[in-house]
Image (cartoon, rainbow, N blue to C red):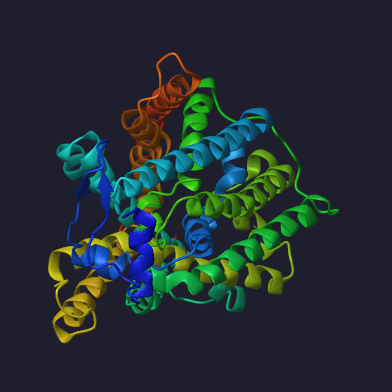
Length: 470
């Protein structure tokens, strides 16, 4: 029996969630080999395989096109026009290529009867058990949970900005807004599965287009107005600072394009999976190119080397808005709402790990036995992240290091390594050397980016304080 026939029978029987990895294949002699493996609770409850390629595109877009893209004008200010646009374009091409390679490896193993549902599963099966347990697993968790902390902090900052627009003399502190935002995430994190987020992530896709359009229009309006700030496109600082700044910009760009959970997203796709991720990636990257390049180019054009960490900060000078207040309010609301979706998507890895450890896959997902631990543990994960965000409002600097150590290996290096090890392309062919070159160059850039980010933490250390009202 073929794989497609097997899946067809399961669908006809009304089985929309796989209770096991029951897929058979044949060896060279036509003998059927059984590779059945019972799914654990994390895979069964969180990574339900029910989605279409369109759902996949929504998940991908939410993980990649996040408010971090509003930092791209600042990244360009650290590199200049030519180097900045080149790195932005190169990162788009390499990540699309790398994500497609990762998808092809996942499809290959699914066709062989062993569908891999998690990044750490891929590392374990392709490189060996130690790689999944001691490197990829912890790196991916650190990347995603670090992103949750950073996003919670950013959500609190957005709330504070909205508050100050309406009450410039307000006395509330940043940590209070972070805690309020954490309450919102505390509710959203209880959504039971990744697939259940499909409509939220569809709204997220629309929201990212909306605030990117607002940011682009705002930059163009300010840059072409009579009161436009002076435009200086030179790279500031000494030669040493320019070099470290360029590597820091590379880390920012790499982190902005980052998606550390692509295998988990592909796991949500209903079998057969062949070709679905590629279509999802194509739609996702239409949104990526539209938003990233429009915001980066318009923001850098309008503000030059005065571009701040987020372009929205340039829309205010001495606490006076350069745009109508309603435009700033609308942009920040759109950004705030989309942040919530991005935060919950990044929490799916934590949810999957918790379900894997503490839920019982042999009984119903919504039984008291499974619901109570889920409610407590998911809430605890959000409370811890919110506490970190409130205590360490400078966590963005720390997250840059996490991005250098996490995003670059997971998104720019391992996909090429997985492909070469799995398919063993000829060493005399182009694909092998292209993959090797990408993995080597970005490994070096990851180390240099990490050094640059650590240096920035050291330089900023004297400004750090717990519960600072930034």
